Image (cartoon, rainbow, N blue to C red; front, side, top):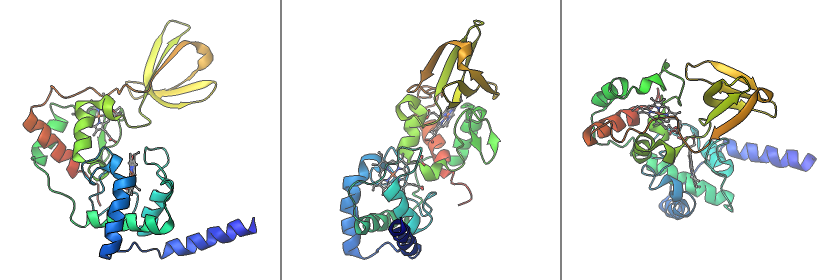
Length: 250
Ligand code: HEC
Ligand code: HEC
């Protein structure tokens, strides 16, 4: 027990002054490790299906220590996994490489963000479900920082084919109650006896499972409509430019 505490204390003391290496040899090594461990999800950094790493401000990793921590432990509740079989030194080199990506960013991409915003608020009706800077609905994830979190490619997939890039925590649940009444909503919580959901009107309901004769969970189907046919190619480019520009106050 005492040893574990000592080890923990040492790790904390070390992490406080942890600095990712920036020399070229380490960056090259970091790139190799990145390609092996990370590019499957993050692509080249800004063209993968996971978080965009080509940004000077990583939301979850303001310091090198927190970046190494994310690499070591992953991000709980998301698809970002803990690193497997990487030494402390290797994690530092990957961290150095990831930082180097951000020095040139945010990347400027095609499209007109102002026109995209108009589409977001108008034709798209996106604000009915999504919040940006505290304004909008709660039937989908908050998009205030979405540009810092996702690559343009991933944003496009989210809009054209929501089922192909489901975000965890937003699955739907459908109940048929003994009374015959049907209730659907976003599943917020579930234990052995109850299901909590937010229905289409934004109301939170907690229903005893004993009251239900049927419970269906949609784990792979998004409640967000697919917008592939709603927007022209130019409009899609503008909409993505708008979303990619959303980086909060960072
Ligand atoms: C299985 C897919 C997957 C792999 C492999 C993966 N990641 Fe991630 N990563 C994600 C996802 C998904 C997120 C976004 C999590 C969220 O929703 O906040 C993420 C988020 C991050 C973030 C936070 C970004 C921010 O803005 O704060 C960093 C940093 C990161 N990953 C680095 C790495 C590194 C370095 C590796 C390789 C050692 C790696 N990831 C491997 C899926 C992955
Ligand atoms: C009926 C409600 C609804 C509408 C309307 C809607 N969305 Fe969504 N959206 C969701 C839900 C629920 C999710 C989470 C499940 C998923 O990933 O599909 C989501 C996910 C997303 C994501 C992925 C977020 C992430 O963390 O990766 C983006 C981007 C997005 N929506 C953008 C839009 C845009 C742009 C529009 C308008 C063109 C729009 N949404 C309209 C409900 C909606």
